[in-house]
Image (cartoon, rainbow, N blue to C red; front, side):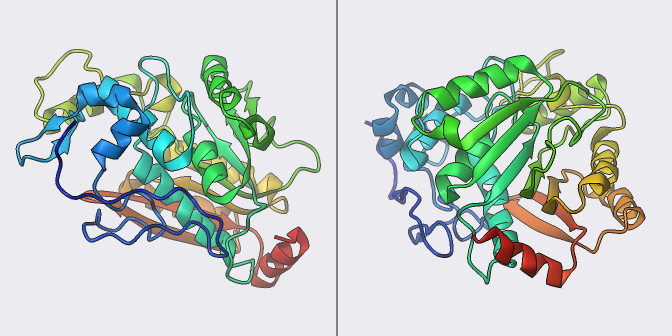
Length: 336
């Protein structure tokens, strides 16, 4: 058994009027949302108990603390399986080689801040019956998995990759009740985002997205090489990134800014059928163009919500076509 320093014990999500309540910790990861279960250091002995395979990847780091090699994609996948099992009761999680392996603490943060946004229209309480659309759910299905376990939300997850959806469905089938709460839909057009996915008469409380942020395959490769250099690894012609990702997961024509601007333009058609549209923005340089697109779309309100995990900074932009009175009426009508 690995001997690590004192670490926090994770608490399974508990239904509360204000969402998930995390155990207080003395050593926290800076700036994660207060309800994020991953604010403390990883409790590797407990995680190994939940998923024994993780033990093969855990050793003492340069500071004498139990850790894994975060440059090793196999180790990162093993850590994710253990976290999902120990903290959220999700079994059988895995992804094919080279697919995006999400950093769970940061993904959970996005969901918790979305919960706060939805609470504004629900008398300050996080709604338990929200319907959520995840654009680009991927092979990992991480947002529906975490959102359903943390808040009991209903999800539709879309993707243009049939193989990714097949893997996500396999994960759902391995966990009782998830297939009833999470529906997966194939987007058959690479040029469309909401069209072809949102069905006639269907409404959502919020949409979310982790868009492809590179503008080309070569730019994605260069970004991967930079990350390997930052991890202290030797350069390689085709390095395998610790968190993986391929094709549409990493790049599209025009990159992140172009993708999000298309999303904003298309959201106009569904303006009365969603309370909040949102998307992650990886690059702050994308924000001016996104703001121009929001102005052109004549949205009623938009927010830029900053997030951070240690030194890593992130953010998401949220926009709505409903004014404040309409948003409150939405919350009352939805009966959440």
